[in-house]
Amino acid sequence: MPPLCRHTLIEYHDCDRTRLFRAREVKVSLVAAVRAGHGTIVKSVFHNFSPYGVSGVVVIAESHVTVHTWPEHNYAAVDIFSCSRKLNHAIIRRHLKKAFAAKRVSAKSFYRGRMRKNQP
Image (cartoon, helix red, strand yellow):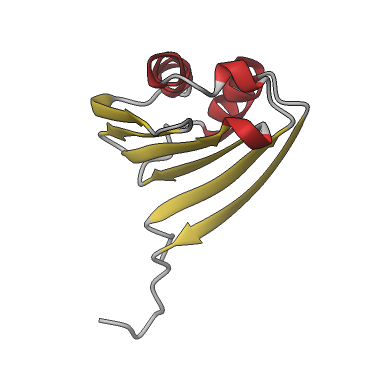
């Protein structure tokens, strides 16, 4: 049986810190990346932390995409969780690399919900 979902963890290093400070700008970048990756947006919520940093989630029909930023470390972490093959994780990764002006990106994908043959 095929897996139920795909989960991709992405780390953006050496980003332009000015692009990671404000929830409004991070939201614009993440929403644009999700749309470019063929995600169907249901709702988004973003929050600015004091003194800095942003956390946000874009709920999509295919599941969700989250972001957490640490401008003081020029770093952002993104999780993409999807139950649909139409969501293109690579497009989202590339779009955000450009949006955050990241010099280095690392990513790992996992398939979730693999059912064993004799499992109910």
